Figure 1 (spheres, rainbow, N blue to C red):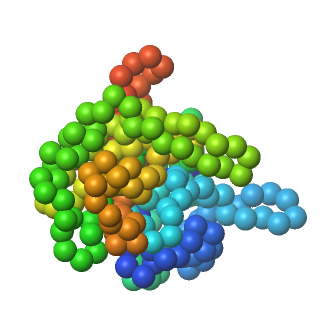
Figure 2: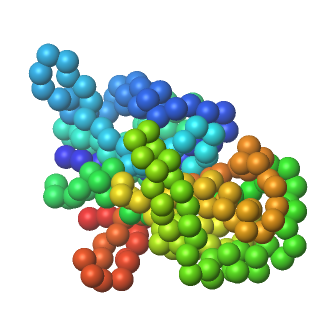
Length: 231
């Protein structure tokens, strides 16, 4: 039986890397008394997978992990049991039992929404909403991505699904699939270059608001729903 766990990560815990988060949850699952399923072989381990690991320093209200269990009394009971052993900065928000045929969380990710705020004060940009509209209205947003083996020319516009401002913060919905995976900080840097402002990424707090899967079939318009609702 597979369950999907939605959790938040904030405060000091945003500086904990992905591998350490995996170890943290492995210990939390044991302490919570979850009837977890282990792999077979000489070195058995809990069968869990995370949807889209966060970069260090990014907070989130929409993280996901899948966990295989042998039994479960009720999703709410598992949520409460895990929260009793959580540390400050990590909170389990929901637990959902998945159908057997559901793809794992990592393979299901299609998009993610983010909020970007200045850590101190507002963005020093006149009419932020209008500047964002003009930036997003461009036919193309060229971006050069350098990897260890090559240099790739990309069009960021293809991976930005929504972009705007709300309450002095920048909100965006971007491609987060394995084949796309647009970093919100890259979009922010390109926007700053367009708007003629100089704001280092270190001055920005990035928060992932939600992670989505796409229920649409090939050729159909995107139908994005939170990973918790995948079936």
